[in-house]
Image: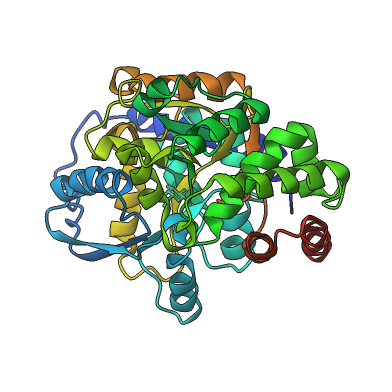
Length: 441
Ligand code: GAL
């Protein structure tokens, strides 16, 4: 289950070559020398009917940046298909913590939207692929020539066996520390690269009456997000990946050190963290009531949506201890079986996977394209740095955003975090993490 079958890609590539070969044959049809009078005149090919009706696309993109990025793709859809009514079906709540339960109710109740947002990797495969809820989209990859523009590793995390189950729209980085440049400058602080530097900076900021680290974990996923950053920073990429495949234990000394570091961090976060969303935490950084936040690069989209410019008002570095690592996740859209307007859903998916769609969406969303052929002139200084890092860094999958573990396991990890944030009991959390791994591996 864990390894997506990369070998099958060879078969898929071979198939795509075969299809290309078939496409070339038309020109070779011989022309009859003498027209035969009684032969019926060939009819004009029937026109493809224009798309009509409604198309309902389900996401959780309502916050600054993510909402505007989505709108950029909707604009393209509306221009191409003016006779289709686009239903922008959103359920607010970062990382889909409110949207996913709604989606599960709809899907299991036989009421699918035409397409929905889903993370590549375990969330896609373990929930929707194994449950047989999705129609493979290999035919779209073939029709659009996407086997040439998507890296094999990308296709592998979208696939179950031979079947490609969704269309990626981006790649996000989750291990970024964002900071208010003016606050750092005023307090003589450099962006921290290690936890020692982080805690030294945090003490200075606290003494100056500024919240060092903004957190908004009204959805516990944001605490999981912070913890996955700390975990990677403390145990490193090999052990981090080992935790996901069972070769490293969650009650090991390394993980306990990470849990303790996370508990120590909690002394430096805003008191109202459990009442806020990730975007409200990011707003604290904009306002200067907090100096830093550790969050995915949808924060970049948020800051831009508020009129800020990277490297001017805000800076960014890998979260402490994670330089050289790129914690990744990918947003994708799928084709549910029984989509009410399947043709329009396919039209939407073709925009999501196209160069035009991705180059409209990602520069606003704060993510990098999942295709290999973006127009780099459209990507700003932060996104260019992310594109570079993605090609040179060690890639690790995000826990909080469906890449590394199944939804069930991720929810179990969230439950441990809820307990840990409340009681700060490191040994109890380590034991509970291990129990969750035992149940889910
Ligand atoms: C992630 C998603 C991002 C962004 C973020 C906050 O799970 O992949 O695109 O939407 O949640 O909502």
